[in-house]
Length: 217
Image (cartoon, rainbow, N blue to C red; front, side, top):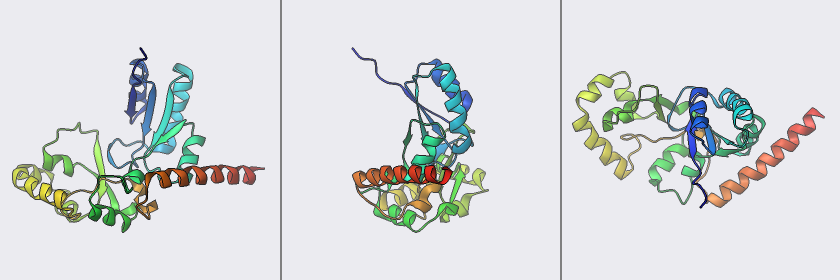
């Protein structure tokens, strides 16, 4: 019987060491650019540092990069940083197959990377006890503007505010709930089929790498 592959998403070198200790088949190095929950390291430094560590300690372990990778340029960059592949979240979130309210897709398409923020608000209102190291990247909106800096008050009124948040989430009110999205939101310009997204990323990555090779020759 074949063993089940273990995939560990990590946000620091310490996490990567622990993943190696428990026998991870794939380590996903997630940068702070990512949407949703994550740490504080950036892809550009975290990926090569973990790549060097894995090459010495467990060279058979595959490394994927995650966080803000939404097109072929990001894929090409991740490969150059030492990753074996990428884990794509936000770009595939903006796909026709994703179970996402159309209003949330519309909010993302109207935004850019400057419109995101790392915050604990979504956890506080839902009474989710995430460790303080982790925050979630979301779109700035009315909910964020109301409660950012007022976390204590939000926690105290979470029973009331959660019902509003849940209603906004269910009905697709992008100002009343949180749209979890990475800094790559500024690179997302359409909602497309998954197959199209992946094909375009691969084609662009190959062209980017070939173009960079010519610049260096």
